[in-house]
Amino acid sequence: MNDKKVSFLPFNALNEFMRPDYRQAVVHSVLQALPGLPENHQAALNRLTKKLVQIPGFRNSAAAPVSVRSKHVIRAFEKNPDMAAAVLSAWSETRAELRQQVFDLLKSRDWELLPPEADRTKLPGFLTTWPVGEDFSILNDSFSASYPEHSASTDDVSLMVVWLSGRLPYDQDETADEPDAGE
Image: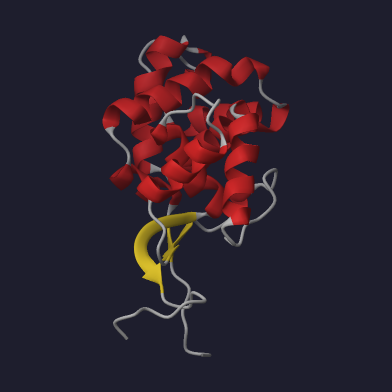
């Protein structure tokens, strides 16, 4: 048991699971909501934008209009784990109700989670294991059954699962309570 290694993928590894149109929608919605977000989210995103994003005609890329800044921030989101983490953290803040509902759903399914308000940007990235018997389809169905009145898209629910759990579904967790029937 002591030989078990924990592996992490950088936050921008999430891009392997995101459709380009959804990535664009997430980044754009965060940039539009930025002025109304808590100072820590604004400061992190503005600092990373100034550092990582070059927009012709703007000395300060963070001052560019959202429509201009968006495509450049998307490129940084794809390449830089810090930008991906900052965008995802801000995105989850803009969807506090969904964040709490997904947290409650995962807790009811015995997922190990940090509190919903924890600063996940301080983590080294995403864990690569996923609980046995869980997938996005099952979790989305369970969410819809638990919250039939909620209008969140399956993409939003899936992204919130990834962000709150700190996990990408690369491998099944073999340390689950129930052993695999084939072993």
